[in-house]
Length: 427
Ligand code: EPZ
Image 1 (cartoon, protein in one colour):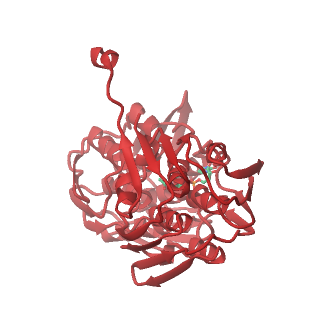
Image 2 (cartoon, rainbow, N blue to C red):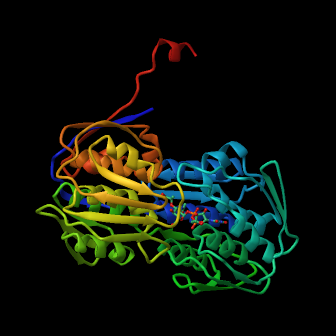
C-alpha cells in the first residue's frame, strides 16, 4: 500500500485551486440514473470514491467517461437495478443508488453497506423514508430488496438529519405521484447542490438548506449539464494545514459561505482569514491560541469531517482545548497515531481533551480512514523531522493526490509506491 513521506517544519505558502466536492458529486452521479440520456457533470474530481461510483454505474449498464474534471454519463443502456455486492462493500455511498433505481425500475437490490472505521453507519432512516413513499423492503443476510409498483408522495420525518437519507428520499420522491415533504432534513450544501441538479433535470424541489424540503413529483426527468460545488472539506483541510504550519496560503474556487463554522473557530485561534468572492486567504504568523470547546454536529455547525484536522492545529496551540464528537462514534482513531508524534490528548467517551504542545515530532503513523489520514498529513507537515503516513489509499478516497496539492504550497512531501517483490510478480 502507498505511503506518504513528509519532511515537516516548512510553512505552507502559495495559491491553490480547490477541486469539486466528493460529497456533492456522489449523490448527483446516482441521481443521473433518474433520466435517460447523456449528462455532462463538471468540476468532478478524480477520486477513488468517484471512480468506484462510475464503476458501479457501468456495471448497471451505463456508459461513463471521466476526462479532466468532466464526467459524461449515458444512462440509456441502464439495464439492471441489482447493485454488485463487491462494489457495494467497497463504498458505503452506493446506498445513494436505492432511491433512483427504485424510482426507475420499481425495484432495487442492495447489500447492507458495511460499517467503517468511523462508526456503525446505519441505514434505518433511509429504509423508513422509502417505506413511507410506498416501498416494500425485505432484509435477509445483509441483502436488502426493495419493491414499489408506484412511489407516492408522503410526509416523511427524519428523527436525525441524516445527509444520505435526506438525499435518497429526495431522489425517490422526485418522480413519485404527489407531494413529499421531508421534515427534520439535513441542511448541508451538498443537499442544496443535489436539489439544484434535480431541478436542472426538471424536478420541482424547494427548501434544500433548510430543515424542510418539499418535492412535487413530476412525470419525467431529463439529462442535463451541471457544475458541482467546491469541496468545503478539502478547502477546510488546506486552511487548517496553512495555520498549523504557520504559513500564508490563498485558496481559489471556494465558497466561504460553506465554511463559516470553521472560519469562526480559526479566528478564535488567532488565525488571520480574509474572504473576497471565491478566494480565501489564510495566514498564521505565531502560535495559535487554544479554543475552549468545539462540538461537531450537523450543518451549519462544526463539521465532523474537519474534526480530526482541527485537532492537529489545537494539539500545537497555546493552551487547553476540548472537542466533542457527536456525529460518529468512532472518529478519534487518529489520536493514538498523533500521540506517537508527541501530541498530548486524552479521550473520555466522545470528548477529546487537548493540551497544546510546542511542537510535534516526525514518526511513522497509519491512516485508519479518510479524514484521520488527512489529519496525519497535516501533523507531518507541521512536525519537526520526517513523518511516514502508511495506508495512504484511505486519503485518496477524498483528496485528488494530497501530496501534489501540498507540493504546490511548498511542502516536502512525496508518495512511495511499494515495488512488487518476486513473490508478488509470481502471483
Ligand atoms: C455523509 O455521510 C458524508 N458522506 C460523510 O462524509 C459525513 O461525515 C456525513 O454525511 C455527516 O456530515 C457523503 O456524503 C458521501 P449521515 P452519511 O447519514 O450520509 C447515523 C467523508 O469523510 N445514521 O448524516 O453516511 C449515522 O450512523 C464522509 O467525506 C443513522 O443512524 O452521514 C451517523 O452516526 C465520512 N441511520 C449519523 O447518522 C441512518 O439511516 C450521520 O450519518 C443514517 C445515518
